[in-house]
Length: 286
Image 1: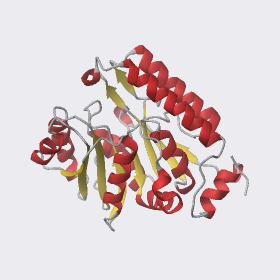
Image 2: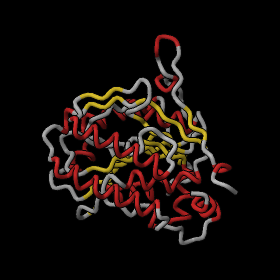
Image 3: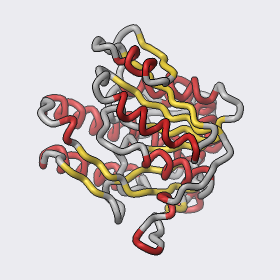
């Protein structure tokens, strides 16, 4: 099978009357929806975000919210439990990639899980994006849905110019080098169907995520694509105000990590240990 035969349908959000997107319409969903929030020292941001997520329970009857506290020292786990969320805690900081793997394992232990949503825990996006992402998977048939900063209807506020340029350049490089069929390859606001994640985990095991930092989002997208079928994008409203003043040194380190990861993936340095036919066919056509 050639690479062209392994193409992916990418849907964009349709806008209805009054400029509302379909994802903004409240539609009850049946399958359990797990929202995974990796968190590191986010005790101040979590209570408000968790309160907003709890309000989605009428639209998402099977909603489960899980905080993966990645070795925080500011009482993140206690704040999350006080707000009514389930918590899994790493004894020390292991990085975003490991936190996501921990969350996926917990969600997929639920046999009725239909969708796994990932979000940043810093309050930079409103809880409603989780509903839009879950709807794209459970009602729209997407294997992966990405909340994008580069889709019509998206809004970005307060992001420093250097960070915005780095994000734009990173997505451009990933799309060109890896053939990723989305506009925003580095967004951490996503939803995966349970079958997509289970297929990827079966193929890759613990090597589904090897990058520790934000580059793991690119790695996840690339390794999950063979099992997704359809990929959707919904607009993301991002307000970076809560993160103002954070070090640009971290941005440089993460950018270097991402470029190194792309180079390894481009060279097909990662291969499924299980010999999964779907993944091998996809990689063989790259």
